[in-house]
Figure 1 (cartoon, rainbow, N blue to C red):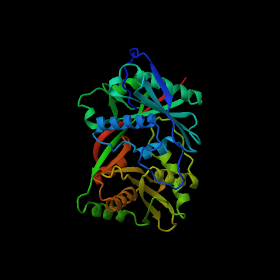
Figure 2 (cartoon, helix red, strand yellow):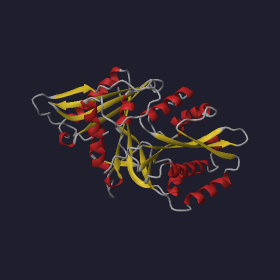
Figure 3 (cartoon, one colour):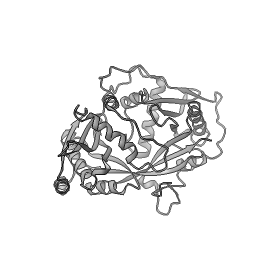
Length: 384
């Protein structure tokens, strides 16, 4: 969320005032179709929102690694049977000045809504952001949601030594009070519940590093074996994989966020796989099985986008609690990085995010060579 408004916004200039309108989307493609990076059939409003997102990513990070492609964004905003999603564009006269969005879970977390706001730089500190936030919050209230969540990222160098920090409710990490987004979130009644650290791993990895880490992990993983797949989970494992995906929603640290366990089944796994494919995203999953029982006990996911070929995204990693202590987290991550370097040789880095309090996973990432790159604040507001 691009929180950049003052506590008392100035009036919005312009003879036409501020107009906020829902962004229309073209119908979805065939269930098995892959992402199309072209703009044919897309509305000017959708393209204006995408341009804002891309400009913001370049301004903050210097690249588009963290920005969804057109195909990804289109697939996301079409929503699913698990989440309703609404995107709005703000204009003053003909000029796009900002956007906001609301996401509404439909199967679980029925009291929550995800909120996002972005304002173009030349229109910040003029009341646009607060108007967009009010619009998004009103929609959440209309849908009976009482707990709002939002996030925003900032680069590592935005946190200067000696900065006064707003501590996270989790007790680990904080964000600088002089950051405009932090100040706006606090003024709007949001509480900083958690800080995640984003980290970057440079590729290719030093020769011999994965060999050493895998050898050490295998020495502790006697009753476990590796498996994996690209894109689609094998039928023999999909039910167990759905179970681990459900556990991921609660086993990963969530601090004081009002998030319930997600209800995953085989259909939800297949829908998620198709959504990735339609968005033009490729994936690689490495997993661990218990040798004696064939039970799926751990997994990790890497994703790659042909339109952003230099960057991989490290997604979920989970080891079932009752199987921890056998270096399975390191085992599956190292195996997946080895496969990814072979499958996507153009990739030059991997990005990942971890809760600041998740010291075990951070230690695994550090051993692999990940280094801090930035911070993400997880914010929450409970409506009265």
